[in-house]
Amino acid sequence: MVDGAGSTETGWRRERGEASLSDVHRTIPVKNAWPAWRRAVAFIGPGYLVAVGYMDPGNWATALAGGSKFGYALLAVALISNIMAILLQALAARLAIGSGRDLAQACRDAYPAPVAWFLWVMAEIAIIATDVAEVIGTAIGLHLLFGLPLELGVILTSLDVFLILALQRLGFRAIEAFIIGVLVIISGCFAAQIILADPDWGAVVRGFAPTTEIVTNPDMLYLALGILGATVMPHNLYLHSGIVQTRVTGDTLSEKRESLVFATLDSSVALMLALTINASILILAAAAFHGTGRTDVAELGDAHALLAPILGATAAPVLFAVALIGCGLNSTVTATLAGQIVMEGFVGIRLKPWLRRLVTRLVAVVPAAGVTLAYGESGTAKLLVLSQVVLSLQLPFAVIPLVMFTASRRKLGPLVAPRWLTVVASVIAAVIVLLNARLVFDFLTAA
Image (cartoon, rainbow, N blue to C red; front, side, top):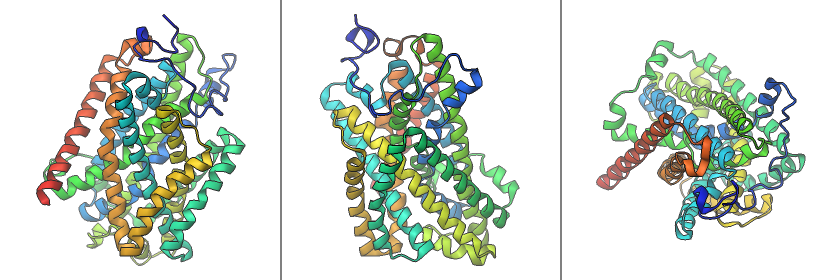
C-alpha cells in the first residue's frame, strides 16, 4: 500500500497527481512555533474568496426581484442557503486537508473517466453561468456609474484579464488582500443604503422565518432557487478545496485537525459577512421598492434609477453602482481561480491564468452581448436570474460527490466527517435535488 497520495487501498482509483494552482500550492507558511492566534490568522483569506461567489451580480438580480416582489419573505431562503453553504464549504476544506485533493482531483481519482469527464462538463457550465452574470453585472455597473453603453461595457469586461495577471504576479496574499479590501467597500456601500432606506426591522426579523408559500408558490420558488443558486454555488466548492491548500497544513494528524478548525472558522466567518450583504440587497429592495408599491423591480438599472427619488439621496445610486462593480471585479478573480482548479483537476489541462480567463470570458461574452443587442437592458435581468437557476441545477453534480468523499473513512481516514455532519449534508443534498426537480416540473408544465 502506498501513502496517502492515493491507491485502491485508500479508496482512490488512482494516485494523487500534481496539485492544482501548483505555483501557489503550500506557499503560505503556518509554523508550529507560532502562537495559536497567529496560526489562525495565517488561515484568514480563502474563506473571503469563497464568500465573493455568494454575492456576485447574479445574486443581485434574484435578491432585487425577490425583495421587490415578496418583501422580506425570502430572507428565510437567504439564511437557510447560507447555513447550507457554511456546512458544504466546511466539507470542501475537510476534503482538501484530509486527502490532499481538491474536489475536481477527487472526482478524477475516484470515478471512471466517462463519469469524471461528465462532471467536468457540468462544472464548466456552472463557471460559464457565473461568468455570464459577472459580464452583465459589471457592464451594468459601468453603465450606471459612467454612462457607458451596455454593449461597450460587455466588451470592456474582457479586459479584466489584466487585473488577474497583475494580482497573480504579486502573490496569493495580494489576491486575498484585494478581495477583502473590495468587500470592505461593498459592505460600506450597503450599510449606507440600508440606513437611508430605514426598513421595518420587525418585518425583517419575521422574514427570517420560513413559510410554506416558498414551495407552493411557483414564482416564489423560482426566485428562491435563484437565491439558492446564487448562494450555494458549485464552483465555490471546487475553489475552496483548492485554495485551502495554499497553506502549509502540516503532515501530522494533530496539525491537520488544527488546520481544519482554522480553515472552517475562516470560511464560516466570511460567509456570515456574505449573508449580511445578501440580506442587505434583499432588505434594500423590500424597503425601497416593495414597501412603496414597486413590486416589479428586477433589473439593476431600474433599481439604480429609483433609489434616488425613493430614498431621497443622490448618493444612493452611486453607492449602488460602486458596490455592483466591486462585486463584479471580485467575482472575476475567484471565477478565474475556480476555472483553473476545475480544468487542471479534472483533465490535467494547465493554461496560463490570463489565457484561461480570456477563454472563459469570451464564451460568456457571446450570450451576454447577444441578449444586450437583441433586447437591451430589459433582457439582462432575465438572463441574470436564469444564470443563477442554471447554477442551482448544477449543484447536485458537485454536492453529492463531496458528501460521498467526506463520508468515506477509506478516503479521508481519521479526518472523515462526523456521522451527524454527513447526515445533515445528505439532507442538504436531497433538498437541493428535490427543489430542482420541482423547478423542472414547474417549467415543463408551464410550457
